[in-house]
Amino acid sequence: MNLIQGVNTKPLLVIPDERGYLMEMLRCDDPIFEKFGQVYLTVAYPGVVKGWHFHKQQTDIFFPVKGMFKLVLFDNRDSSSSFGKISELFIGERNPLLVTIPPGVVHGFKAIGTEAAYLINLPTEPYNYQQPDEFRIPPDDPSIPYNWALKEG
Image (cartoon, rainbow, N blue to C red; front, top):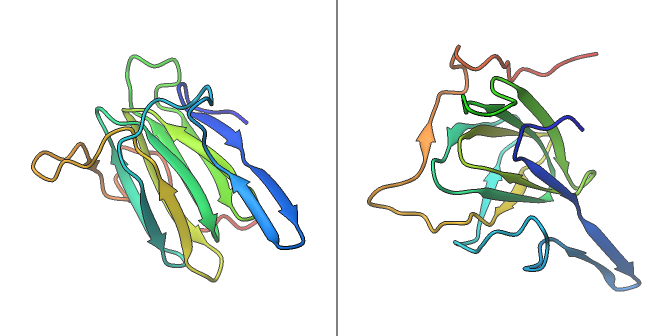
C-alpha cells in the first residue's frame, strides 16, 4: 500500500465464535494511538461524497464498521515528502482497516455499494463549536487532482 507520509493503517483483528464476532479496533498501547478527543459515528448514503476537508490540529482515526467506503487522501502539506500525492483506500466490512489521518492531509470518503456505510471516528481533539478545526473544500475543487466518479474497468 502506497500511503501519504504520516498516514497509518492497522488491519483489524476479528475474533469469531459461535455467538458472532468481536473486532478489536484500537488500544491505548497501539503504536499509532496518540490520545482521545471524542468518538462519533458518521453515516454516508450510497454514492454520497463527504469531503473534502482537513484539520490543522487533530488527527482523525477512522474505523469503518458497516458497508464499504472509498477513502481518498490528498497531501496538501508543502513540507511533506509526499506533497501533492493522492492515496485511495477501500475500507469497510470487506476490508476492516483502521486509518489514521494526520493534520494537513485533505480527506473525504464516498459510500460505495447499495447500502449506507457507517464509520466511527476517534479524533485526537474534541470538536470546538466556537472555533472548529475543520476546513472544507468542495468535492469537485480543481486544486485537488481527483474525480469521485466510478472507475469502470
